[in-house]
Figure 1 (cartoon, helix red, strand yellow):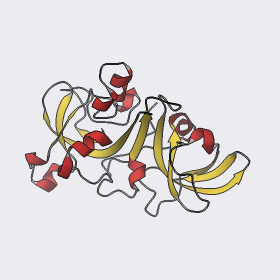
Figure 2 (figure 1 turned 90 degrees about the vertical axis):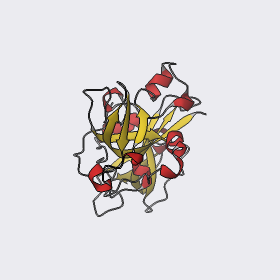
Figure 3 (figure 1 turned 120 degrees about the horizontal axis):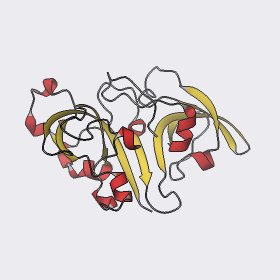
Figure 4 (figure 1 turned 45 degrees about the vertical axis):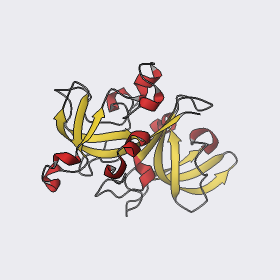
Length: 218
């Protein structure tokens, strides 16, 4: 089974090296005195869609696709006309390669849990080509194969915000089978299939926190 996990970080572009390669801060550069040693470098063309097309290996994926191409990254996607402030969803492998420079994967100022800023993309096995988004959820009751679940908009699950709504879901079909199942009345992580999320009318987490939310890309 081949799976890539992505973590959403806020991004402020600090340098552009090519149509797809850029360097960025994960916090407002004014707050770090424009320290260029804190810049991340990423190639916005090293994405899941590139791996599916066979242009790169899955192990080479650095970043999720641009939101207009089914991913969650909102910087770029091409320079010089790309967006300079937004979200950069880095692959976990690439984030780990940064070593001690890696920042916490819950953006400063947010009110969400780590899993609310995560997404999975499968490339092989039974879940091949499926994408799952992370949410904070609470299982209320079960009737047959359906579960009544309340779900928070991503980035709001650890604060005082109320759930975005309550839905009946077939978790065996709609949720990531490799994530621990929900326990009734104990809010926890739930990763839902992209097609399921489309029907819930959920919103993306605000990255950076002051940015407005918008519907999930498909």
